[in-house]
Image (tube, rainbow, N blue to C red):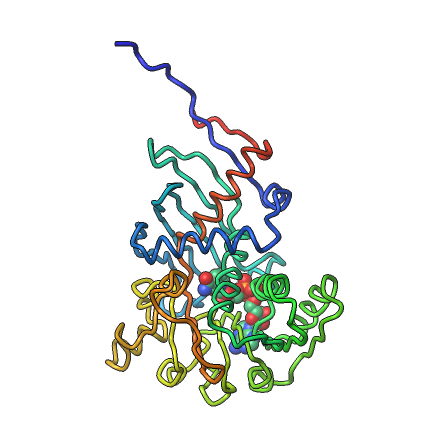
Length: 342
Ligand SMILES: NC(=O)c1ccc[n+]([C@@H]2O[C@H](COP(=O)([O-])OP(=O)(O)OC[C@H]3O[C@@H](n4cnc5c(N)ncnc54)[C@H](O)[C@@H]3O)[C@@H](O)[C@H]2O)c1
């Protein structure tokens, strides 16, 4: 028997500018990859262990100070495995003038389990999170909505809104609120550059902004809920990206509560987890995981009156699917740097 030829394993490194060059700043690639990942999720064709949160600051540390490891395997026709390793410090912007979050995503070949790529992960992470809101809005937002509200105006908010503007040309007004007025102004300037025809209103209070929106997104770093159910107008779709913003009564009174993954959401003393531990919410009260709606197993919005809460904790299959789509584009466009593993 012939001895197999030993190869020097290599892997592809893709920086944020490589990913941008490959079209990683526009939304459709991410919507397609997230759709693929969530439909596999609904069909049970993924493996995704619960993500560990690495913290070392004790009980006093800020909720956004952590590093999270997010591994996943995606089955189906185009299998891949991988890991997002995402670091966050709440005061990176104010202390160092850098983004709060940084990330690397590693892809592994599911045949050999060898690493095949390392990608800058924060752009993919932010864009896949925006794709989750946009994809969900197609099934859960009121028809022809044109008023969007965003609370918290950092980089995640920017990607959420640019993705929605790209996907929903009917959006006419965007209401913004941030505890830091300069952040809201920064976001107006950013959005205005690409969408000057849209009206931007910076609200005086979070309540004013929330009451104005048909689609509401939270993108803060709060650890204390501030958004009660009675701020929401009938027909609102709320995408609770920053997870700790809505009061318990939103979970209890919304017509439909949707998550990306029940087990990943029901952890870490998040609001949903608190309700479950108190015996006030259970999986039976959950309307659906988002993938179930995408494959038609559960209905989306059924009337323009419904108030629908999406509580997407963010899951590894989304990062791995998006990173894999970008990796495949990079191979055919010959973008990135090949690194020798040995
Ligand atoms: N669910 C997911 O999949 C997912 C993915 C990525 C990021 N996130 C979350 O998105 C959030 C935003 O990320 P970022 O990188 O833009 O953070 P950031 O720190 O850069 O920006 C957050 C902004 O929110 C403002 N803010 C904080 N508390 C507020 C409050 N109570 N009311 C109004 N404004 C407030 C801050 O002033 C700041 O401008 C984080 O909580 C992050 O964990 C969620």
